[in-house]
Image (tube, rainbow, N blue to C red; front, side, top):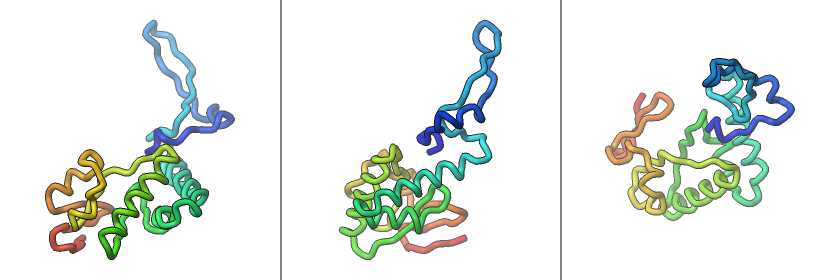
Length: 148
């Protein structure tokens, strides 16, 4: 997710680093994207996603609300009462995130029909079993129970 976030041109001087080129000389380079090792990377990535969701609340109200209210770090955990609602939410989330250069993956569900529109490559590997782990919790997809 971090590499999807561009660093503003005027801020790139704060992200300089030295790189030894193939001839052995040092090159002075600047990052153009948010990098994993920066202290602020988490904030920049999550804040970018939240700002994008706020900007598109009118076009994708449910997806924007889910991102703003139910996202922690880079995980979104939510529920839907009806299968059709889950399918609609998946489509809305996919569209909203794609418009910002992001993509959601590792989808999991406790009802197989809810992810009928989600490709195999977008699904969580653990959704093939019946346990899904996130944020220190384990979700038993078969019995629909959360454990710590």
